[in-house]
Amino acid sequence: MILFDHSGKNKKLYRKLHSFAKIKNYDGSELSADTLADCDLFVCFGSKLHSDSSVSALKEFIDRGGSVSIFSTEAEPNNHFLSFYGIRIEEGTVVRAVYHEGFFHPKHALIQNGIAQQFGSSAENMSTSMAFVHPNGTTLSVEPPSFTLLSSGSTSYPVDCPVAAAWESTVGRGRLIVVGSADIFSDEWLERQDNSKLCDIFFDFLLHRGMEFDPSLGRSDFEEKECVPDISSLSNLIKPCLQEIEPLPQDYTTLLCDDQFGLTMEHIPKVIDAYKTLNVPYEPLTLIEPHFNCPHPPLRMATHAPTMLAQPSPELELFDLDDCLTDARTRLVRLGGKYVDDCDLTNYILEAGWILGVDGGCNQVDDEEEKAKHVLHAVAKMILMHSNEMR
Image 1 (spheres, rainbow, N blue to C red):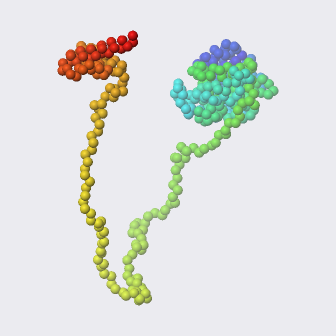
Image 2 (image 1 turned 180 degrees about the vertical axis):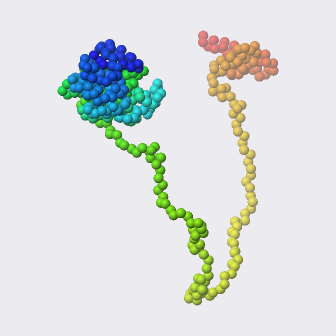
Image 3 (image 1 turned 90 degrees about the horizontal axis):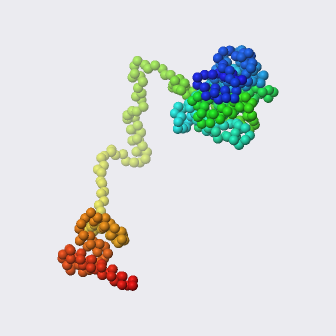
C-alpha cells in the first residue's frame, strides 16, 4: 500500500500508481507508527515533517523496510530528517542557461545530459541520453552512502549539481529517493520529455519491482561548490580608501605657495666674472638681424604636353549580344513569339530571312512586299535544291 500525499496537481501520478498498487490518502497530519503500519511506500510533496515525532516515525518506517520518496524544494525542516542519510536540500533554484522551444520560464529547466546513474542492466534501461524537465527545482548535497540519480547537466545553472538522490539500506529493504522539485511529476510536467519514464523507474525502485541501482556504475565526480563573495551586498558597503585630512583654515591664502617660482638679479655678477675667467670679451647683447636663405628651384621653360582627346567608350547598349551568340533556331522561335498577334507578315518574312542569311537579291528592290517575295522565292529554291540532293 502507498501512503500518498494527494494534491490537486498530482492527479495523473495518483492514477498511475493506483493502476498497480493500493493507495491510502495522507491528510497532512502528524506521522506516527500507526499511520505507516500497513504501508510500503510514503510519497511526500513539499514539507510535511514539522515535528520530531514525525521524523522519528518515518525513520523507524525505513528501518522496518519501508520506502520513502520526498519531492520538495524546502530545505527546512526536511533536512533534519535527510541528514540521517547523507542528503541535504540546498537553498536556491535551478535555472536553464540555454533557451529551448516550449520552455519559456527560466525555472523550467530542460536537462538533456543529467542522467548520473545506470538504470538497470539492459540496453533499454541504460538510457543515459534521457531528457527530463526539472521545473521550479533546486539542487541537493549528496554524501555516501547516498548516491546521485540525476544532475542539473551542462545547460543549467548551477552546472552539473545533483538534483535527485537515492539511499538504500544494506541490512534491510528500506529505500529513499529525494528529488529537489515538487512539480517534476505533477500533471503539467509528468508527460513532458522523459519524466514519465523516470517516474516508472523511481517507483519501481521504491516498490522493489525489479529495478536496482548500482552506485559503483554511476557518477560521483561532481565538483564541489565554491563560495564566492556576495557582490550585490558588498556593492552597498563602499568605503573610501583615502585618508582623512585636516579641516581647511579660515584664511585660504595660507595654502598658497609663492616661493616655487621667482625672478632675481643676484646671479648676474657671477655671470660677468665668468667672462673674465674665460678670457671672453664682454659685450652687451644686441639685436641680431635675421637673414633667411630661401632656395629657389632652377628656371625652366614652361612646356605643356598636348592634350589628347579621349576615345569615346564603345556603344555597348547598341550591341545586341543575342544576335551573335544565340543560334538561328532560337532566334526564329523568339521572332515567331514577337509576331504571334501581329498580321505584319512582310516584316516577319524579312527578319526571318535576315536571321537565315537569305535575301534573294531583295536589296535591289525598294518595295517591301517585293523584298518579301524575293526572300520566299530564295527559301523555296533552297528547299527544292536540298530535296533534290537528298534523292
